[in-house]
Length: 377
Image 1 (cartoon, rainbow, N blue to C red):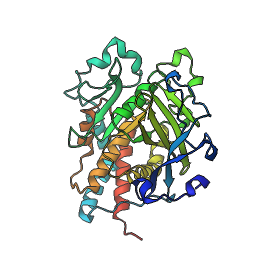
Image 2: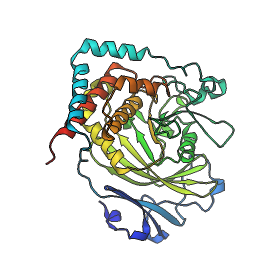
Image 3: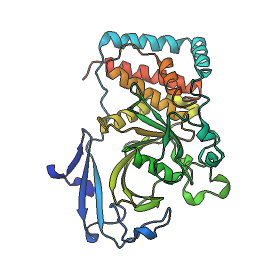
Image 4: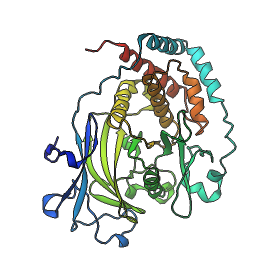
């Protein structure tokens, strides 16, 4: 930890306490902090333009994030041995027979949801600039609807496990230049506090790197390098950035509504090393990453935002893996990954795009279940 995070919060300051993270609201003056570490609250908010940096001569308030344990996340052990072996047998059967695996995938890939004709809003010409060529158009029934502004459309889908009234995830595309304000509006309106970014750093472009031909296509870095930036109606401040390994970074953002002056803390988990050509090499670091996300925010009821370029390939693989493993740790004894994927595809088209991504989920599930069955040391 750096010097700023050596402070230990008192009980009255504690907002959220977990095994690995404390989030604390603190106040300070200009003389006690610098712009890289603390949230700047503009004294002239109404004149700020989109994507404008906030000045330095302001008063400060901020939310600090304390990472308490940088060690590997422990493997959850809430699984009984017979169930674990049944699940492992199921996975091994599908993974060892390549022909059967391919046949299963081809059947899944042909699956067509009953909702497949209901995406009129996404096809509306006025919304074409809010889609990306490689990304699916969300179904009308499950799409996220923005509540503010003249247009409620964003290419994002609410996904649930068992209760349609309790979405667990939001699957969406990585923002384009034009959709960054809508992205932060969605995060705000849906009460999201966790973002999972599955784009590598080299796949994200800075705003000033994008020419006019890439406005509707390029994946952009939607947060400031340091200090604060305004995106539409929201001021986003980078509070902290922690590199936990070569595979992922955890960032804390202080999100402020310029309209209401309300503030929230949002944490982004950024996975850095996804490589579609060597996907199986991602299994161990991805499982570690997923454990960190779940352990840090266990009990949070709002949906987790998960995004990649198309909002369905890597996003679908991560969500399916998380969904299946969460079911296992909750004691579900019968796991059908193919049916679970069809369930996700009922809510967003093309979730998981390739056989390799599907195989990755099967293999990673088997690896995690095998680890759960190992005697604790």
